Amino acid sequence: MSAIATRDKRVEIAIHNWAPRFVSAGVPLADFEEVTAGITRWDEWCAAWSQRGADHEALGREALGQGYKLSAAGHYTRAALCYHFGKFMFVHDVPQMRRAHEKVVECRGIALPMQDPPGERVAIPYQGRTLYGILRKPAGAGKPPVVIMCAGLDSTKEEFDVYEDICLARGLATLAFDGPGQGEAEYELPIRGDFEVAVKAVVDCMETRSDIDAARIAVMGVSLGGYYAPRAAAFEKRLKACVSLSGPYSWLEIFEGRNELSREAFRVRSHCKTMDEAREVAKTLTLKGVAQNIKCPIYIVAGEHDHLTPPENAKRIAAEVGGPCELNVVLGGNHVANNRRYAYQTQAADWLAQQLGVR
Image 1: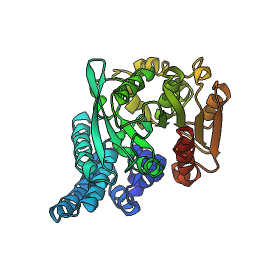
Image 2 (image 1 turned 135 degrees about the vertical axis):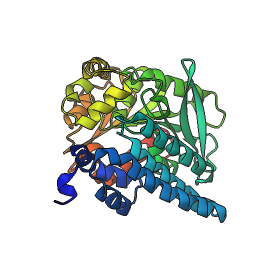
Image 3 (image 1 turned 180 degrees about the horizontal axis):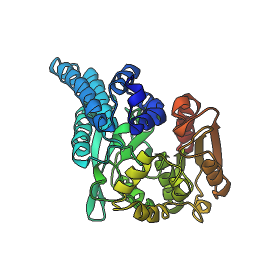
Image 4 (image 1 turned 90 degrees about the horizontal axis):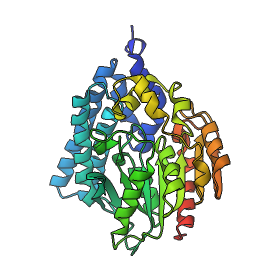
């Protein structure tokens, strides 16, 4: 019997649902095919991707040792992505997941000062704790506007490199961060529906900087972050524009239809002991009675064939917002239209540049 025929259902779920995401985020297609071809059990997933991350990390060390910093940055960034996709849904083995996650942060941290333009690790004060972000600024831009980037249920700030580069090329600074239930914060801070509290802390932090134009701040979010961003825009009036990519209108309404990896990841990152407790938390992630308070311009994207967050969610948000709205339902698109990024990614960045006055 072939390896594919005997694969763990969870491995099949990961490959079927997220293959375009891996590749469009920067994982080489050959890496995706080779690594997943050798995995039959979910228990093998994190270790297999961590090994591929270690391969790229070794290339980064070699390039750095030879003085090729830009090449090293590329290798370390790919290493971080591989480690990230090893840990992204691996919540059943938190110690192993956390070891891989430490490598994500380490490798991207090594890459940041060598990238073009470089990045900076930013500490964000938050309710007596600290959230961490990655700030990158376009070269020679003076005091540029900034786009705050909200990750989703299983993503982290280190997954945004491609989004960052597209914004940076248009004169926009980027601040990708890990909020409650995400990345570096997920072990101590659970997911919260009122994500505007976290975004407020980020905006407050940006206002303390002399190298950012705090009067021109936008927010964007991907997947569950596509809920977090409009939720924040409804309450944080310092935000001048919002982009929502495949965000749910009500997490509870789509919760049961999500696959088992997503449901379990939500349970763990909500710090819930049971799925019933997780459903109670899910009730707090809603734009009902909230979307109408979004007055800033908003650009909403959905994939026509998104089975994780059906496009009706985007249409519902668009119908209820209280300000200017542009809705882009990508024909043939899957979740976050990762298989059709050319149909929305540069378009959303151009829209942000126009809203923030750099076009």
